[in-house]
Amino acid sequence: MIAPPKKLLFLPGASGNTQFWRPVAERLAHPAQQVHIGWPGFGDTPSSPSVAGMDDLIAGVLAEIDRPTALVAQSMGGIVAVNAALGRPELITHLTLTVTSGGVDMSALGAQDWRPDFAAANPTLPSWFLDDCTDLTLRLAELHMPVLLLWGDSDPISPVCVGQHLAQLLPSTELHVFPGADHNLGFSHATEVARLIDRHLA
Image (cartoon, rainbow, N blue to C red):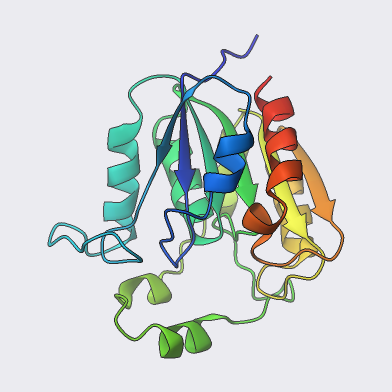
């Protein structure tokens, strides 16, 4: 039997928007403590000299995992979440991944390259995350906790076939596709997303 999580960590995408998951979090019935993670140097989170790469973001999340924990992650946050789950599988009870690569190569899956436009629109953000080419394909089979995959069928950045690919690689998954939803479905479809996460955690 899967232990219920005592903590919920919410991980944003590359925007670092710590408010992104608030509408979902406010609608959840699950009683676990909620923690909203920010990425140093992104969004409204001050930069830190100790953060200079994806490994540092992963280390920051791992430091928050001090009890049975569920991770809820969007886009770039999904790569961090998968790495954290691989690092502390004994404490990660559940994963919710939305519109993310999850650490797989999306180049053959029809994904639009978002990086040039994002870099141009956000010139003050650190550039190292744009160069990250983490490929966790061969390690995803190690993740045996339940994984909820949430995708929109109108998202060019992470199209549905990416979610389908992850569903084939992860041992215990449920994929839910939102008609007409795009890369912000975690925010725009908060009520339905919260319902699915509550069911997932139960």
